Amino acid sequence: MSSPSTSSSTSSVEGRRDPIRVTSSLVSAGLESVKRLQLALNFKGWEECPQFRTKLSLGRVALVASVLSVIWGMHVMWIMNQIIMTHGVLNSTTICISVIWPTYVVVLCTFHLAEFFVTALYNPTVLSSDSFMVNHSLAYTVAALISWAEFWIKSWLFPTNSFSASVSMVGLVLIVMGQICRTLAMKTCGESFNHVIQQSKKDSHVLITHGIYRFGRHPSYFGFFYWSIGTQLLLCNPISCCLYAGASWTFFHRRIPYEEATLMKHFPNEYPAYHASSYIGIPFLNLFPPNLSPTPNNTNNVPASSSSSTSTTSSRPLTADQHKRPSFQETGRL
Image (cartoon, rainbow, N blue to C red; front, side, top):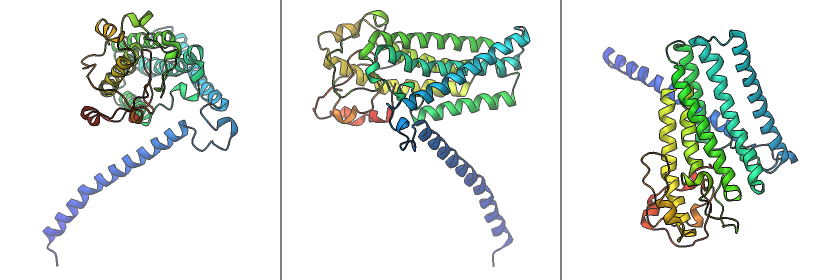
């Protein structure tokens, strides 16, 4: 027969475990919901419908474009209506709910629509529903949901003390700058730009050093890096701002050295001089490590080149340094 103290101790331990179990269950349920959302963005389960069967199907393109356009238009009208109704005089609460959020949604929809339409204009041979980038990756979806949750929780708990018009304006400036840089990079590269690295090099691939590439080697990456941080400054999300900055920096820290080595292999006579005379613009990246020649086994689904040539068919074995590097199949498209 157990003593009262033993029973009390057991109950106390079980009481501490229950919140852990509940939290674990909630996290698991949340992750499953996000995974189902990602499957929906990838049109899983639509294979029986001919117009939605593949990423090249017109049904997918029409549906994604329609949804993004409707959301974009609704939020533009929201902003205009709020400005008209208040005669342009907004207090801190209305800035939060009626200006910052719809501006963010317009920015987000503009980015995804631009990804598709710029590709359609300047590299139509690779155009598909995936060009909208709304199904970029599970990590991208999770990051967006976290930032939305932070914004609305903060708006509910601290509606008047957690927003700054000046911070949001800085974020908007970064967003516009980033979007312009990325769009110009895609336009300048033309057929040499792709959201996913190709297995073989096209004859049309050349080293791009003119236009916006005179000022930086990877302007599309530069643009996305500051665009992503700008979205969180616009929302005045301190936690997500740090998370986005860290995640973007880590992604490019892994990605750009690999691409630098690829370009060095394709353009051994031209690229060293261009590399030496140009910059990235993303802080603290240790670029251009030696002996990183890519192989077919680790080039599938790699983010696209932001310079010019995009792939290789080398069959050389991996070096010891390459074996330590993570597979770029995990990094999705960009």
